[in-house]
Amino acid sequence: MYNILNFIKPGIVTGKEMYDIFILLKKKKIALAAINCIDTNSINCILKSASKFNTIVIIQISFSGSIFFIGKNISSRNKIKYAIYGATLFAKYIQKVSKYYNVPVILHTDHCIKENLG
Image (cartoon, rainbow, N blue to C red; front, side):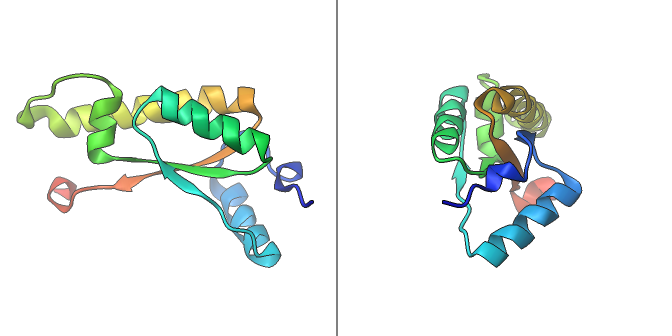
């Protein structure tokens, strides 16, 4: 079986690596899963599965998921601030933990509500 992990290092994938991944996936006709997460339990479950099946994964978070990730009751006037903070913590958590699972991760955080674009 083809193991894409032989070519991509664990952790968050950026820049040229991401381009190389998509070229490789297209060439090999391999699909890539993208899963929404809102907490560390779901992230850990996805990383464990990706590790078990020796694959890369896209982990994504929405605007409201970013707020939920920090576990606060947010007033409507601070939603954008807390969503940014939550998405940042989400990314940092994945950056640290994905290396222990030996899994490359593509982060997808652009599920933004049009009104929040400003």
